[in-house]
Image (cartoon, rainbow, N blue to C red; front, side):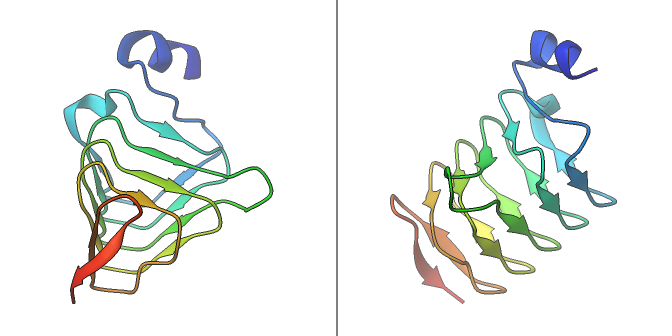
Length: 113
């Protein structure tokens, strides 16, 4: 199945990652790369070309419930993204994101709560 996803959608979504109920992979998951130990909370929306993965020895991200992740965003390392957080398009997240906040940029910084 992983090979079929990679071929059809240029996406890498391992069967071992956990995606909660109601997770939406917009645009058919086109270009999405997910870590094999990733945990994504329910009702999260992930747009195209998003990478959520480890940083060598820095662990794997954990994504809360109801999170919005914009197109082209990268969430890397032992990062916790709190419930209801919003990650702007093309943002690079290397530190925890507090519940209910919006982060943008490279590196990502908080713009509102």
